[in-house]
Image 1 (cartoon, rainbow, N blue to C red):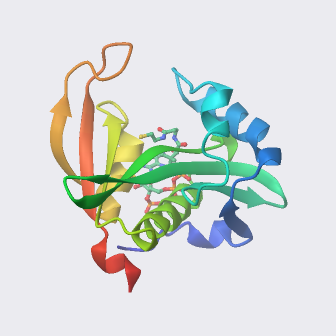
Image 2: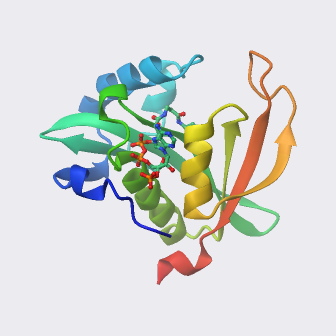
Length: 162
Ligand SMILES: CC(C)(COP(=O)(O)OP(=O)(O)OC[C@H]1O[C@@H](n2cnc3c(N)ncnc32)[C@H](O)[C@@H]1OP(=O)(O)O)[C@@H](O)C(=O)NCCC(=O)NCCS
């Protein structure tokens, strides 16, 4: 993986597990960036789980990622369910840093492969996922409620454990 040319912009970034006090800020970002945001209660159910991370700058939540690991057909599969950066903080390397940390947390939790779904039109997210090494494995017609197709992308993280 290459490092972001913007990484130095996010020098004072902290990435840590999410807590109850972060939920409102997370939910506000979710509503600001997604046409079909998750309801607040969806975030509560991931509290205390290692795959729910927030990025903070000067104590303010500027982004988050949510992932989990489940066992399927005898292997542990990671699933990146949600990742977002506040609109005013985008383009400074925060999304890339969050993605790397959440992928690492899934690898440490035992995942050998991580999958995600991304809107066909979401060129920015796809550019990030491509750059990290994700590959498109299929297209799911009408995956989103508004009828847009999704790409399913996967990444082998078995050797991320070091
Ligand atoms: C996708 C998202 C999380 C990326 O976070 P970010 O902090 O803006 O991204 P970064 O600054 O770390 O950039 C990482 C890479 O994303 C891509 N990218 C970021 N902004 C971009 C832009 N304006 N145009 C094209 N590519 C862009 C580039 O590949 C970039 O790598 P580079 O810096 O080496 O060029 C953020 O744009 C976002 O929250 N989008 C709305 C929510 C969303 O779509 N989530 C993904 C759902 S699948």
